[in-house]
Amino acid sequence: MCGIVGYVGRKKATGILLEGLKRLEYRGYDSAGLAVVADGALHVCKASGRIARLAERVDEGFGGAGGAIGIAHTRWATHGAPNEANAHPHCDCEGRIAVVHNGIIENYAALKRVLAEQGHVFRSETDSEVLAHLIGEFYRHNGPRRIEQAVQLALREVDGTYGLAVLCADAPDTLVAARKGSPLIVGVGADEYLVASDASAVVEHTANVVYLNDDEIAVIGADGLRTVTTENVPVSKQVQQIEWSLGQIALGGYDHFMLKEIREQPEAIRTCLSGRLRLRANSIQLGGIEPLARELVKTRRIILTGCGTAWHAGLIGEYLFEDLARIPTEVEYASEFRYRNPIIEDGTVVLAVSQSGETADTLAALREARRRGALALGVVNVVGSTIARETDAGVYLHVGPEIGVASTKAFTAQVVVLALIGLYLGRRRLMSEAALRRYIEAMEAIPDQLARVLEQSDEVRRTVERYADADNWLFLGRGYHYPVALEGALKLKEISYIHAEGLPAAEMKHGPIALIHEGMPVVFVAPRCGTYEKIIGNIEEVRARGGHVIAVATEGDRQIARYAEHVFYVPDCPAPLQPLLTVAPLQLLAYRAAVARGCNVDKPRNLAKSVTVE
Image (tube, rainbow, N blue to C red; front, side):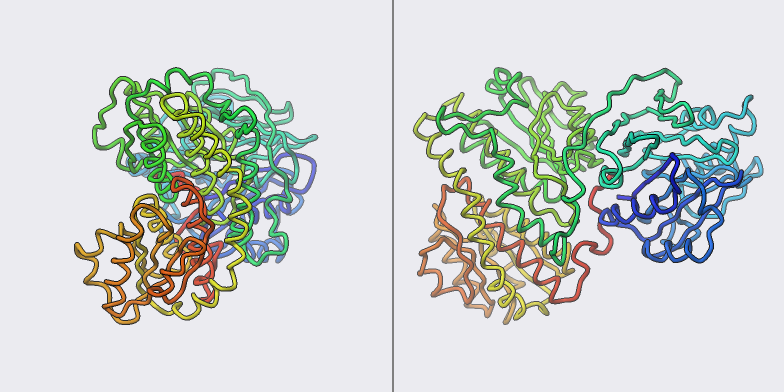
């Protein structure tokens, strides 16, 4: 959620730090700050609110403007109010050490009490400030004044998670970065290094990066980059390539990243499918899980785990795996999985779904599953992410960076990958060659079909503008479209702040029907499928109580137009693939509602793109 940027090189650090922070704005924040070492002193500038305010303060006369080493941060409030005092960087008592920190220090209260007894004075309500004072304490009292040693000693006392960067005025050419449970990378450029919590902050300067693992520290100085553990054991790291470009994180003429990413979905799915659908050979090629194919085919049970939108994709995955491969499948909220003593038997596969590959709850669930002996797979978008590195195997989405906080193209790609895995296993277990061919042909058609669905954007806008003032919506679907209803409701909540609920349509009469009143918008995901006649009955129940019905239906279905006031049509395709099409009008609906209500689409309140704390 929070963002970190650091720079060491020959250029003026301030401009690079501010630009890096701007590229991390999508992660969500409420204050920002930076620190630079120049002329033997540490210069700190902070501001509550947007990065533009921080930039104004820097322009007004910042003493460190000429420095070539610095750190910067965007904060999303956890401990303490979103104000300037709680903004990062935080400094030690002497004002010689500055720290920026992502994560949560779980034992901060005990550490703070001990430090206060030793005379430390704290100026904020945050857990992060404890780190600055703790590092400062070790720096003052432990032999030669080397900042990296002080960081190592301090981190051995810390319980919790951190991604952090540290500066010291006495070491004007050294930046120390460390990671445990919160992502951090080091960009390796020509005579310069960048530290960041997200590749988008470094891609303008270099495509070469080093990914830090948990309990690793990077020391960047005059001698270049070296990495050690918190126990001071040297670590050899490989430089890897970022697989996307600066152009992919630009708006490109769109009003919002969310709209851009909705529109990118047909091409994103083509890329996701590229090389994986083999029509001539009538096969699915998934190199990421091929080494474990024999074990996967024999699996007795699959547990899908994720959070938010990824959890909804997992629900669709449950239907896919059971329909296509006949494997018993469960879906677990990652945030609950590790706390309920889950049963992991022989032959259990746990599949973690996460766009960023850094979602803290999902990563914790994955580690718990592996500890209990499960085979672990990952479905992630970010190459080199922690989940990608810690799973036994997995499949990348390959849809490029997703900047909008409300996930769209990552969701559809997650469903695509889960469908591919279902077909891959299904063919090896029981699916006929002819059935697989029909699915492959249908999947190849999805990108063009999705492009046709997105052409209804103006019609969606006109419809939504009639109901944008409504404060309560229902989204209803059956079978594969129950998770789609959940996803539609979540999107509306996330970016327009409208209360919305997604439900299985059959459950409406078991209580929620009491909510329906004259004028209430109710969205039905109702393409032609095995439960079509049942959902028509649900629609009539809503109409009888004065609700306004908005339907997503199959092209050519004129019957539903007699019951629904507004219909968005999607092309026909096999039921397991229908969510890839029916979700698109709901994404557009949420986007248009947010715009109509004047909401900040790409920076919804209280939300962050990557939730890296529990």
